[in-house]
Image (cartoon, rainbow, N blue to C red):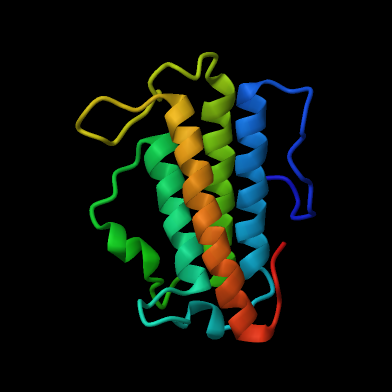
Length: 160
């Protein structure tokens, strides 16, 4: 994953795949920037009645990346939102960045977005790479917005 500086996706001059990946990478960087420098234990403390925390959101997206791009199964999606006592900020961020790096290798190797994803943990047919990229933009964007609000509640730090 590129550094966390605010590189916005290009507006023109690139193809569909590059546009989708640039938007996804932009949102991935936003997620990381919402947790880096966050104080413990506030980063893992629920900021809303549902139990959602900034650390839990990054942990969840790590699992989502691994599920859709790397074919790793998830037996309990709600557990992916709950950091354990062993989940440190550094460890969760490192795992997320590694998942993103591995996912980008899979994406780069895909020559046709209309083809099914090469790895799938689903029992039914894998969705197309186009569908996965659009879904990941939606999923990551939604959770980046949640993380923006939760981080601001913690220490006043605001997102992009």
